[in-house]
Every structure is written in C-alpha cells, then in structure tokens.
Amino acid sequence: MVDREFTEVELRRMLEVATAYRDDPLIEGRFVVETRHRGADWEVVVEPDEGDHWLVVVTAYPL
Image (cartoon, rainbow, N blue to C red; front, side):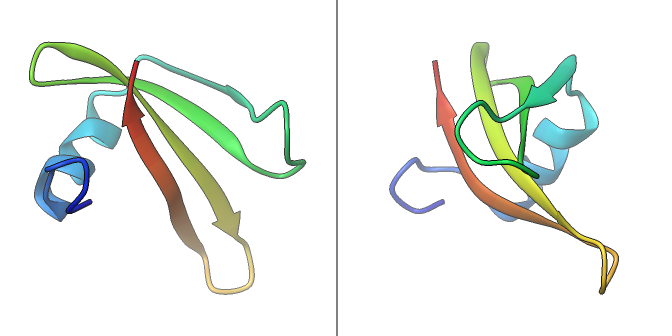
C-alpha cells in the first residue's frame, strides 16, 4: 500500500465500488477485482480464506 500510495480506507472503498471480478488466470482460488481509484482503473487481487471467513488482499495496482 505504501509503494502505491493508498491507504486501507481507500482500499476498502475500491472494493466497495468494484465493477466486476474474474478468476485470476495464474493462481487457482484467487480473484481479480476491477475497480477505480482517483479517476483511474485499478485491479485488486484477492484470495478468500474460507476457514476464517476473511478476504485477503494479495496486491492492488493501477492499469
């Protein structure tokens, strides 16, 4: 988050305004969330942790 200059609150907002998601083509069980942040398209890679009922954010990056 520090490298890409966004906060946890901004990341939560990105997930709230997501427009679509798809399976990650590289790793089974992960998903790519399409969203917007600061007027630009972004992708957030997430992985569900079904045991703890969490959604783990792996990375987020602008397109």
